[in-house]
Amino acid sequence: MHSPELLKGTLQTIILKLLADHGKMYGYEITQKVKELSDGSLALTEGALYPTLHKLEAEGLLSTEKVSLGKRVRKYYTLTEIGRSSIQKRIEDFESFISTMFNVLQLRPIGS
Image (tube, rainbow, N blue to C red):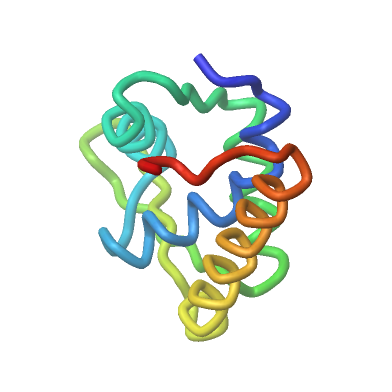
């Protein structure tokens, strides 16, 4: 498992990228997809996920849709146009950050 502190700084980018790749998703589905893609190394908690989803929604990057499934109501999140247009910049910023951290920590790039 990776440190929750490391995850905290990247959670918005992870969520936006997942929604860009998979369309609308609900919270539990997001947590399971992150777990799957990270081979279990990243575990999103509700305490981290939902405040981040609400923040992204308040910033206009996500919209929500409630769907009734029998007695349950599931809240789906999708990217807005603003969210869609911001994802590439966030990924580029993240790649630049990783490169900077490799330099600062004097690490070799992975695979070399």
